[in-house]
Image (cartoon, rainbow, N blue to C red; front, side, top):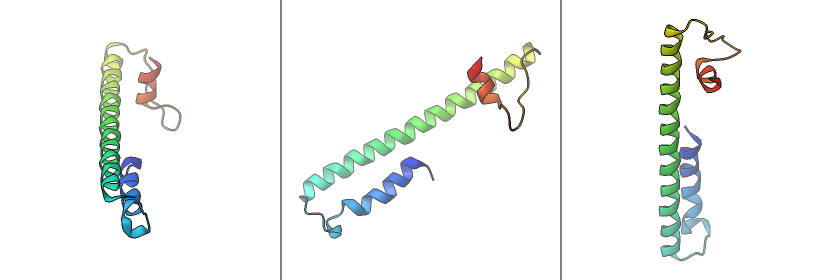
Length: 87
């Protein structure tokens, strides 16, 4: 479970009027909608980041085929993603 999803799950019960919250229902609905937008944005951003990382790894592997001087990844030291970030 990502941080974004855990925020969504842990905050919903706190926003309900059952928890002793004395805010107007319309205000709570507005806050819930805003939270949903933020969580959706967070998840979309994470997906974009993951896609960029995959593209970087693919690119470094292609470059390594063309130029053998690019070092391979070393488990526990540096991986392909970080080599791509350096280059």
